[in-house]
Length: 110
Image 1 (tube, helix red, strand yellow):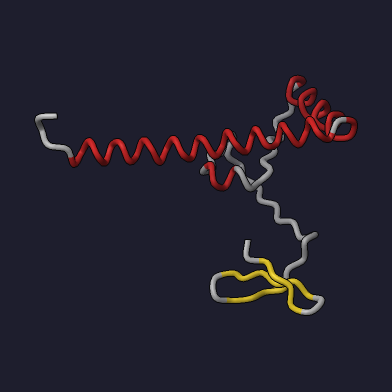
Image 2 (cartoon, rainbow, N blue to C red):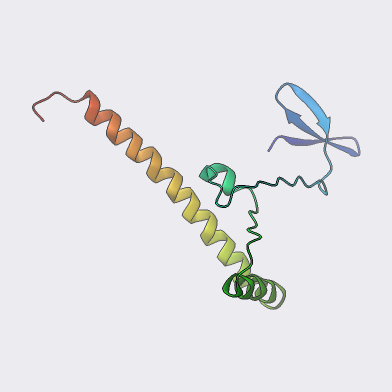
């Protein structure tokens, strides 16, 4: 992030422009797509909520809230593991792309 403080006010550098930043600001997007696909970089920085309620999904959400309240250490560990999995997925895609590029540039008699 490019958030910095000037005096008592926090600013966010967005491109070449500096705008006031409020840490309580939240932005919500909504889609009519039943199963939207987001790049791993975006998904790792967002909270994606699927409003198609199933009993199992509601149980998982409730369990996550209870664990967050009663065992914050477990919830933090779970979030860290999820972020690591996303980072590994991004790394895997980069490695696959690199491998395909090297194979495409390799001589025919490998």
